[in-house]
Length: 339
Ligand code: TRP
Image 1 (cartoon, helix red, strand yellow):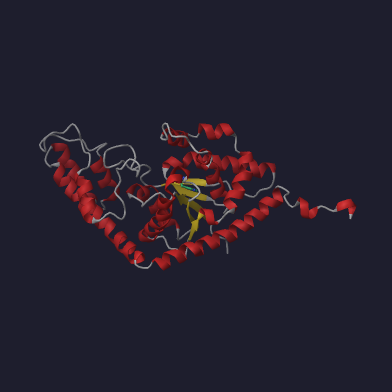
Image 2 (image 1 turned 135 degrees about the vertical axis):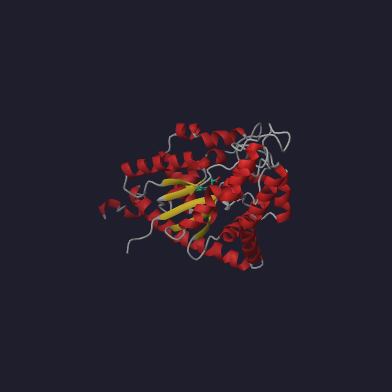
């Protein structure tokens, strides 16, 4: 039997997950569980920007695990892995950093943008080098596929480069992983900003209650050029319609609303009301599953412990190959005085 190809992907534990995570990544993860050997990583080494709030990171580990279970990731099939409990990540990252040119890291557009967000606060070295850790995350389980949001593509490029260099110079240890971006590569925020994100405070969370969802949708940014419901409106670039497209399965309803909106025959209130209904219908089963697991946190802990143990077994096997490739057994092999 041919072994299934492996997936490694991850999320930083900084808080609960939102609709952007779902449409950009999680939806793919759920689907791919049936065809791939999946490792889902909670990247708790990758949060040096939260060093002054470790309690929040610890709390967020549980939030992320609950959201994963809520959307249907299955810990029996797939390994839920806590990054720092597989310390081989750190060991491998140090070796791999030998093969990553500084210039490639400095030019990484995602990293550059994130470092600018620090403003006048100083950037921890660990933040600058987090893409190296991410390279190690992906190569340690020798993953073939990395389903991620669009912003992560530069990191996958680094990973491929490091894998190529290592394999060429030493031994063929690492597959060159492919990236896979979700159906909605970048979901706008409810405020119309380019990206839904916790730090911009413009997110709808998978765990938001129906009342919170209604309120957030009511406050959503729409077509700023439209003053009255009888004015012809713009559908393209309108966040309310982008969400309809992404989450409302009733295509006929969406088409009809768009048509009336363009004519000036439906108001924002109605379009938003229908969106809130669609979003709540989508989120209801997710919220139900989340509540069931939240009432049984022992299961969540077991999922994390089992998955981490499985990942560690794979990690040890890879490190054997890495040590062999880099000739790190030199002390044991050494025979003093020809003996
Ligand atoms: N940096 C990713 C993010 O911010 C999270 C992450 C950590 C990741 N390790 C990974 C993604 C490995 C893919 C593969 O979303």
